[in-house]
Every structure is written in C-alpha cells, then in structure tokens.
Length: 638
Image (cartoon, rainbow, N blue to C red; front, side, top):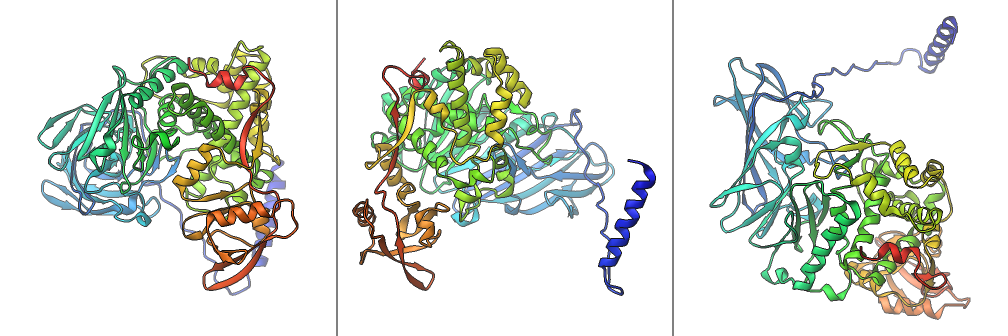
C-alpha cells in the first residue's frame, strides 16, 4: 500500500477514536509487558537436578518435595512449574496445588516473586558464589472430587513428576538431567517406566532428562501384581483390595494378544520397555493418559472380576498403548514444544487422538480384549451419537481441536450444540472412511494397515519424537494409493454437515440402523454409567437421582423444556423409574398423546409433555449384503 495512504488511514482512525472518548474523561494507556523469562535453548544444562519426594503422607494426601538445582551463574533465575502438558493438550498444570514453596542457598532463604503475567514462573536472585539452590514445597492432592483428580489414598497413589517438580527456564527440557528418589509407605510396591534401585521403601531412579521424567509417571500401592506380557512389555496392576488382582490366565492372554496385534499393525516398537500402569479403585481418580514408555490407566473395580459382564473399560488400554506410536513417537509438528511453558497448537489432534481412537477399537477386537460383536455395537453407538449432533452444522471438526484449551473438559450444558473434543470419535469415523477408500481404490489390496506401517513403523526402537505435518499425511497416503486425499481430509475437517461422516462404515459393508432392543454393550454402558440413555428415543439421558444429564439440542426433550439438571418426578402420573419412563415411551409409539412428566428445577415444579412417538431406538450396525466385508477384515486378528 502507498505509504501516504497508510498515514492518512492512521490519522483518520485516531480522529475517529478520539471522537468516541468524551471530553474530560480519563483515558489510560496499557502498561507494556516486560519479557523477563528466558526462551529455551537446545544446550546442555550445567549439572543434574536432584529431586527427592516423600510420598508417605497418604492419610492427608500430601506429597513433600525437596529439589536441589545446580545454578549456571549468580543473578536472575526463573523456576517454572509445568503448565502445557502433553496428553492434556492444554495448560492444565495444577499450579494451585503447589504450597509452602521455600528456596534457599547454603541454608539462607532466597526471596522469590511470582511472575505477574505467567503465574507458573517464579523469579529469584541467586547470590554470588552459589553453586546450587534448594527448593522445597508440598503438592496437595485433592481430598474430594470437586478439587480435581484424587492422586493419593491410603492404599494407592499416582505420582506424576510434572506436579512434583520445578525446572529452570532457558533450556530445552530434554537437556536438563534429573535424578529422582521417592520414599513410599512401608510395604508398598511401585512401578513405572524408569528403572530404579530399591532400598527399603525408597526407590532411586536412573538419571534421565526432565522431558523423559515428566513422561514417566509412577503408580504405587499396598496391593500390586505385575505380569510380563512380552520381553519388553509388562502389565502392572494396583488395587485397593487383593481380590481385584485376581486375573485369570485367559484375561492375561488377551493383554498379551493386544501387544502382539499392536506390534503387527504398526511394524515397530518405539520404546526399550513399556509398562501398562493399571489402578483399580473407587477412590483414586480415574485416568487414561498416554506416555511414550507407559500409560496411566485408572478404572473402577470389576476390571477382572466382572470381565464377562460386558466390555467395561477394556478399550482404555488399547487406546493408550496405541499412543506410544501415535502421539508420542509421531506427533503433530505444531503440538511439539521444547519445554512445558511454550503453548501447544492442536490442529492435528484429529490424527493424534482420532486415529488412536480408531486403533483402540480395532486392536480391542483383533486381540479379543472385546468381542467383535461388542466392538461393532460400540462403533454403531459412536456413529449414531455424532449423526445426532446438530452442532456439526455450525462448528467444524477442526475447530474442536481447540476445545482442550477453550473448555479444559469442564461440564457443558448443551454439548450437542456446543461440541466438545469431537476430534476423538468423529475423527475415528474419518479414519474409517480413509480405510474404506484405500480398500475400494485398491480393490482390497491396500488398507489402513499399510498406512500404519509406513507412517508409524519407521525407525524401530527410536523413542524420541518424530514430528509431521498435514502434508506428510497426504504424501504417505498418496504413496500407498494415489487419490485426492488432501481434498477429502480437508472437506471432512472443515465441512458443516447435517449428519456424521458414515460413508466409511457403508463402504466397508455396514449401515447404521436403530432397533427397539438395546445391544448388550449398550445395556452394559447404561448399567456402568447408571443412566437411562434415551438419546435416540426423545433426545435425553437420565442419570442418578432421576436427574437429566444430557439433552440433545432441537430434540423433543429440548422442545419439552428439559435441561441438564432437571429432575423428573413422575411419568404419566406415576413416580419416576427408568423402566416406567421407557414403558411410557414405548406406549406412546405411533400414537398422538405425548408422555406427560412432572419435573423439578430447583424449587420450581412444572408439567412437561414429551412429544415423541418413535418408541425406543438403539443404534446397531446392519450388514450390507453377504460375505466378508471390509469392516470384517479390518477387525480380524493378524
């Protein structure tokens, strides 16, 4: 643009702004932000941090930390608490639970000041002649669920090093060496990815870099058992009672097949050792979090003892294990960061999580962790859910990759209209479509297994990070089977469509239908969630205490005025029960009279009419034609 024209526009803008400020009113200007935290450099840190953790106060849920940090030079220094956490995809470090921070040098206290902009940063002035400083503090685990995830109970604990350490600003975290020791309660056992020497109740872990330390959680407890699955992979299980550790040989064999099928699918192993950390508890907070050489998996009691009741949480381990390849070894270039202060960008989470969701279901079926029939029913439930979400009409799939930062997994009142982290399961449907296209275009000679080996199966044994871009995905797919993959993927990521992308299921031989009888896996899901799921039978879900927990935007339940938090008191003049509500919905099928309900919001009662006449509807997959279809081949063991 011509420079005098720019100047003229600026003068006009200033004049317009001044005209908007009433004469005589105060009009301050902002104070500038001073850049006082050094950017990370890829150079070795001068010395090894010694991190000592006392994890014995399990009654009160308090971790006590003493950290000795070598210093590079006297003068200004910044200590950081990890903020942007891989696997959380957002700034989720629990800085609010850090307490009692005291920094000393040679026994003399050093004052610290929290950064006024980055509250995860602590400034201090290192005295001349100081070679190391000592930082001590406590991490206060939640004692109730409304405080966050409970990480310590009298029988179990989940130790995440990112919550129990500070690190010096100015270096790539992979360049900062750390030696950690942890003291556990007497008689407890601990497991994690980092080897350790054990002396009594104290574990002294091998020196690793800080990036690896943060990626290496530990689970410890009073009751534990470990099963080797292969020479490199083990299953370490912790529970509140010994009875929950009673796994049968057949159940352990299923976990062994999971490892075998994953290695066959990806064609490599990107770890020297890998540990499934599985906690079974009603009190320790549940979790599913990926790491490169381990995974944190927290489930409620019954994982082994109620195995035959239904799939339960058995999809969790296949999902988190797949992340060792997808998300840890291969990671979107814009989400990789040199430290835990640099913001992550999540544009490729539909690969990181979406394709991992895909492989989680595929591997659960291939290994027999979950039956093929239950897997098909679970895929039907996913397809139906996203096919019913009207929010797809205004918010595209790519935008949901921002949700970990926007909402941080806080509850939503209208998730069907707001959307959530849909890159997981709708992303899975996109990868089902990719698999079906590969099969169709190649006359069955190629499939997503070829993509897995080409994309994830490189550099066997490398447990660093190999980043990729959208272009790399397209290039890999085109090398397997030429097609306009860029256009297809871009369309699925950015379209505002009425229904979910179901062509992957249909091209692979199955269509989504609805029946009046719920599949076994659906019924089991209702039982474990303690809900009556009527998402496709009027558009709502009723949970414990007769309280509505979900309402689909624009559904008959929405039109009746139901919201999350509404309590249903009665159905057609009778006291509420799940069976009575389902019976009333069945009775109203093909009729004209709505289901009458009295409901309560706060102290206000009112009568509502559910004008739904489609009866009970539950999603299933129906085979198209006869013989083995693409989806059958996809789920078959290798």
